[in-house]
Image 1: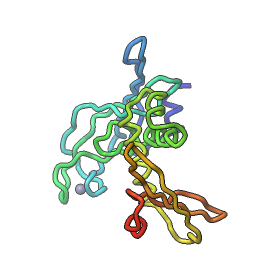
Image 2: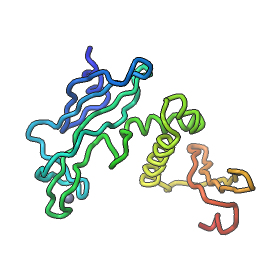
Image 3: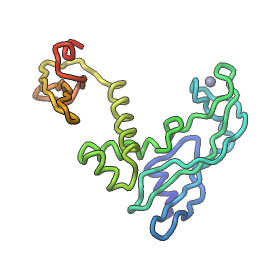
Image 4: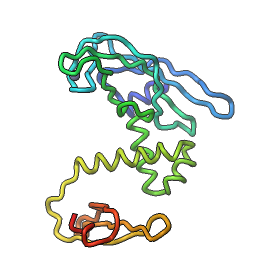
Length: 199
Ligand SMILES: [Zn+2]
């Protein structure tokens, strides 16, 4: 079975295809690069408005880090097109696997964010040989997604807790839903004052 077959199984895109896979890096730190190309006749999507627009030109190739395979780092390689959009001007196309200019793919971001729930951010970065910044950005992505999709209907009981962070008595206030059918963290606020809770 080819790596492309596996990728198409775990993450298939409507408008892009996986091409050749090659070894890069060195003996001690091998890496895999997977070339990605747009499908023929596929018009790029404007990252400003999300509409299909005519192509304008193409930027240099970029690497987007994907979930590692058997401990080997995996990168998707693609040269993004720019579109000429009547409402947004010249814009880089929207890529379904990426978040703006971020070097991590969404898939790898979710992967790191899920491990960062079990391990400390520092441990997560060490285990997957990535930076603390990458883990932080991944958690941030997950939190942003959670906020945008948060549904507070049906919350009947809440609990409030505080945790100390850093040295020097800095606190965070945590608000949880504590209903029997659903226990989850709803909100985090700086400090532990009445003002904090009123927010
Ligand atoms: Zn646009």
